[in-house]
Each structure stands twice: as structure tokens, then as C-alpha cells.
Length: 594
Image 1 (cartoon, rainbow, N blue to C red):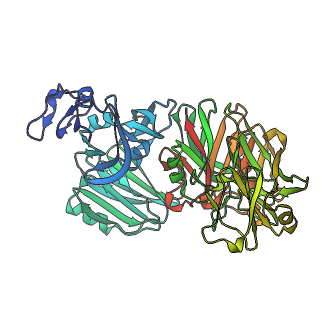
Image 2 (spheres, rainbow, N blue to C red; image 1 turned 90 degrees about the vertical axis):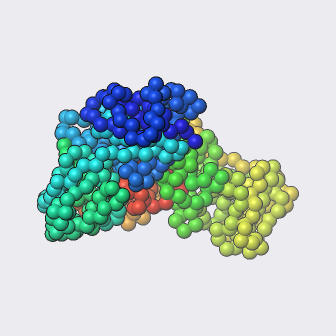
Image 3 (cartoon, one colour; image 1 turned 45 degrees about the horizontal axis):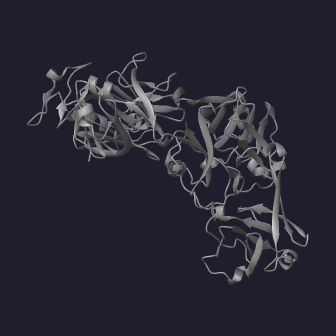
């Protein structure tokens, strides 16, 4: 358990609740204890947390309502993960140029932003809420894994609705600032705020007629707060002005910004138009000299499986991530290149585009072929079709311990050859294996022979074998990390999109859908990009995606898996879409801060 601490006059003291009641800084003598036996203000943060210099937790309770939000106390600062400041307090992040400072709009007029100290720790970016707590008289108390924030209630003076071009606006006039939470819902608006309202205001709010975008309002008292609910045909966006909460319900609610999120990481989002059609684009602009990229996948112990990108990123402790290669949704097998530190988690297929990089920040994108050959002691050679892959056809599939502890036959009629220390130790027909499959030896591999009787005859127990491989083009061989996608979009700012060449269907090539991509700029920066549905229609086609990547300044670009898989993760949450709409994925590109 951490010591019980409270914020008093910009300092921390041990004890119970203290009421903060001023605009601006206050001295300890102006704070009023609300519980018996107040603790001396001489007990500072350093003294109270001597045994735990950095208190941390995951539970946030705001005016009695609980949420899961990482928080951290360090050097007299109270940090909430930045998405907690937006989602649970109702603040808006504004563009910034310094990673250690973050301006926010919270019940201020334009130009009157509050600047909060910021720091990154454990994959989250924390924003110091002390200036807000001081200014608005919040009570703040950490206890164990829980941080409680209680703010003085304000009064709702009026609730107004108005029709906008292409949407609707709900405005709440208040007597002062309040903590506001807008929940994530598929087709509903749920706003919870620490406020009261008289019967007349509530009756008028409930009686207001439903609109085309926002249904009739219901208002429910909840533990000293008010909860407003209504059906919504578009995702709502909340922002604040002086003594006002404004919620817009419309298709084009993306707030453009450019935020220096961490050293070497800039988070950007804005609309980009192609032939007059705007698309919401979210991307991370990375300096490879200050960050590391690594392939990550569902489970470090196996190449098989899917999970939400948020789960994968947090499992690997990545600060950011973007979904990457294709996979089979039914059996959850990867369908494309994943190589980390020169080890194939999954091999490339169909000469599709890949991105390769090294620890020096060099990046290269090409269409890749992996040629592998199995050679017996007698000199017979057999091509190996793929390594650790869900892409199967007649021939030989190679499965190493990276695939997982066991192999379960993909096709009926397979013959499984076990090789240990370059010697065949047995052959098994797939029909003789149980549901558990066959163990993959830690000092060898399995060969899955599919309609390949000649190879089966040449690989009896006791046969010595060797494997050789080479990459085409050879320019990708020096890159220890590879992730497959496709098609390749740009090379040297020239459009090289050819979906058919990479054996994608025409339907895939012309389909309009959300998409993910990776690109590089002339100065060596890397862009991780997600593009979504246009306010006026569907998401981009591959050609439109290429045009967007050109507008973002990339010289080389590769399409990654898209549709419901298109997800961009940053610091604990998806920044490009609701997690409700995001599919589970098999692999991703993870970003790790130095």
C-alpha cells in the first residue's frame, strides 16, 4: 500500500481529504481540513513517499465513478495518462512542439490553453494535472492502486440543441467547469458530469425534440453527478469553452493537431483530400535515431493467434504500434513475412512487398522472394515452399520452434518429417496424429510434405539433410527485421502500385476501405499511417492511399493490412478508431522508446 497523500497548496501532505478552493496558487494556510486530525503541512511529498518515490496505479475514481487509467506520482507531479485527461476529464489536447509540455483546452477560450508538464514512462505519456487541481479546487487522494479526484460540482444552467450543416450540436451552459466523461458507444451518446441542475432545466432538456443525428435526451442522477444519454447516428466529439460543454454529432469531427508526443515521436492527424474527397488521416512521424521499431505478434511463444492491437502492444510493452501483415482469420496463421533479428517468425509469400529495417535507422521496401532449398546427403534437392506460414500449396512447408511448441497439420494427407540436428528421425502421416499435433524439436524442425511423394521417398529416417536460403533482392538480406504487407505503393516518389504482380485480386485492389501503411521521407523519418472512411463516403482505394502517402511527403510506401484491422496504437489506446470497431490482428510493428 502507498501512503495516503493529498495535494495542498501545490504540495503533497500525508492524511485525509483537503479542500482546494482558489483560482491560481494557494498557500497551505488557506486550505481547510475536512476530516479530523489534519496532518501538519510540514509533511512534504518527499517525506510521505520516502519508501515509494514513484507511486503508480491503474484505477481512477472521478466523483465516485471508476475507470481504468494509468496514473503516476513523481517529483511532486500527479500524472494521468494523456487519454485519461481527454476521456475522463473532458480536456482537448492541442498542438505542441515540446514533448515535455502539453497545452490543453479545458473550459478556456481559444488562446487561453493550460500548459501541463508531460513525461513518458512505461509506454504511457503522463500529463501533470496539478495546475488544473489547483485552479479549480479539486480534491485528490491516492490510496494503493487508486487515485481519487473529486471536483466541486457546478450547475447546469441550460441545455441547448442546434442543427449544423451535416450534423447537430448539444451545448450545456454551466455555472463553472466540471469533470466530464463521454463514453465510447456504437450508436449512443453518454455524458457523465459532476453537476447539478434544477427541475426546470432538466424538464426542458428532456422535452427537447429529437433531431436527425441526436435522439431524445434522458437525464439520470448518478452519485452526485448527472448522466445525459441519447441515441447518436455519428460519433460524438466533446470540447469545452468558458463555462460550456459542447458536443458535436457529425461525420467530420476529426480535430487536426500535431503533437510532439515523445522525443522522436510526433502524433499528427488531419484531413487529406484526394480529388476533392477528404479522408481522415492519423499518423506517427518517427525519428529512427531516437526510437526503435520491432516486429511484434500475438504471443512471443508462437506465431499463431490473434489479439487486439492494444493487447499485443501492451504485452510487448511497446509505446506505439500499427497493425502490419495479413493472416488467415479462421486458423489465425500468418500470411506473409515477419522476421526479427534475422529469425523468421513467418516467411514471405507470393513476392509481395515488405519493409525491412536495421538498428541504424535504415529502411528499405521491396517485393521479396525467399528461396529455400533442402539438400540430402546424396545430393537430391527440393524447394521449400514457405517457412512458418499459413499459405499452403503442393510442396514442402517448413516449421521451426518459432512457429510454436507443436504443429497441427493444415491439410489432410500431409506427411510430417521430423528433423533433429540435420538428420531425419521419423515420418508420420497426418492421419496418425491426434488433436494435439506433433511436437517441433527445439534443435530441429518439421517438414510438412503436401502431395510430394518424391520428397517423402528421399527422406527416410537416418537421412542427413541441410537447408540453404537466399533472399531476392539481395539488398534486403542485411536487414534483420522484416514485415510483409503489400502491395508496394511508392518507390522514390514514383507510383509503383501493381496489385496483380503481388497476386492480390482485382477486388482487393479496387476496394475502398480503411487502410494502414508505412512510409519513409527524404530526411529518413518513418511514418506509420492509418486512413479511415471519408465523411462523404468509404475509405480510400489503394491508389488513393498512394496519393495520400505522397501528400504526407513519403518517398517510399507500403500498404499494410487494412479494413477492420487498420489500427494505430499510442500510449495505451487506439488513436484512429474506437476499439469496438477494430478487429483482432496477428502481427504488428511496435515502437520502443530509447
